[in-house]
Length: 257
Image 1: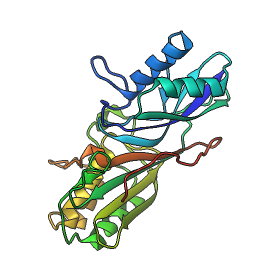
Image 2: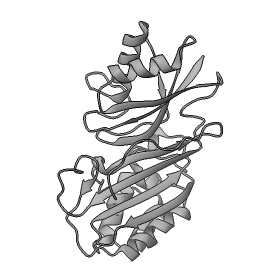
Image 3: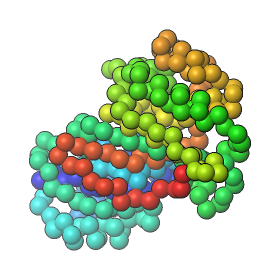
Image 4: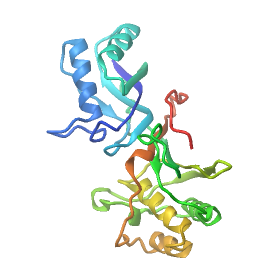
């Protein structure tokens, strides 16, 4: 039987989602703990990949297992896992439904705080910036709804069949004293480092070091900038993954912003 696992994790202690030899990743820890609980080797498929230090307040993976006691597995697996990985639900699905290929919507939130705060420093990025031009930043963000090819904002475009992403919504959310900023982008897919590159450019626009026209030129020309200006990883959260057959509320917690 195929099961979808609805999870969340803090990425601080991991070299991303995907397992790699010689590193500790979320996928590897989950496979190890599933094998420990079920007493058989287990291979899992995630809904995507996150970089080292990036978090997911909503994430799905699927695994093919013998018929299981869902509640018992949920309890035993959460007990075995470290505190920074949580399983919320285990859902039986159709045999061909795929955690990665069937997802039609993904939402990322990037959290920024503009004052030093040790209580959110691992889940929000600290940029000591004042008087950001939020109007220009929002104007730039709206351009993402107009363009579709993000080859210029990807670290490894050659590894993809194409670099088209259909962005469906964007938001710039700022609190009254501009101490917390959240940039939200939803799309059918994202490219490697794409959101961190976009956020890095938005911060340059907010500080007057880059113009909106320069940003759009990269999208039009599809030329990768000489300097990518990646934003820090810890502010990035995969916050929503939706399927035609499964759309669950986010049960994870994200930093204020």
